[in-house]
Image 1 (cartoon, rainbow, N blue to C red):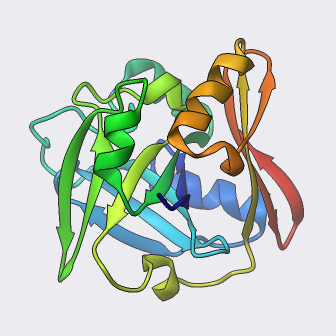
Image 2 (cartoon, rainbow, N blue to C red; image 1 turned 180 degrees about the horizontal axis):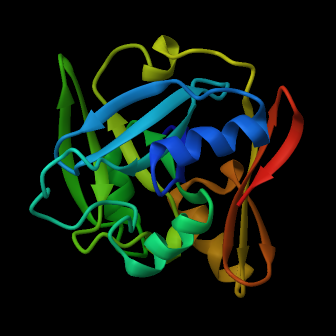
Length: 211
């Protein structure tokens, strides 16, 4: 089973808010990406090194109601309130070549597998039906792409690189056990503390921590 970081998401109240904030923090204008019709969200994306990408995501105000709870807790009142203050580290996504195997061996519920398609490219992603994030976002979603170049290869490279995913949890030993089972222990740093997710990033303004 080959697991690596696929992308990581910063949630924003609006894309305009997120773009302005990232300009100040990272020193780059994150390029506009695409729309997710099934979730009524849209994003901005850019390369983040090692065939991974940075995603800025928000509810699309021009899209109709998706008819389901949006992913990544974007419909949750607590998340909505936090995002009105500033963009936040929302979640991270792990690229796997055996999604069914990951789900079969996972000691926690990762959600249902949802199929997506854009043009000729398809992908499968774990999405809990109620829109929550496993372990409040400390555990990643898992994605399996159809054959072909990673989507990041077609995105702009603005000199931003993901250095580390940082996980804080009141029970690091239990979290490490879960990470070991899912074969993702090499992808994040786990330490003790109040539950929190953050991304250490190097960019034009130096090393910053997005939380």
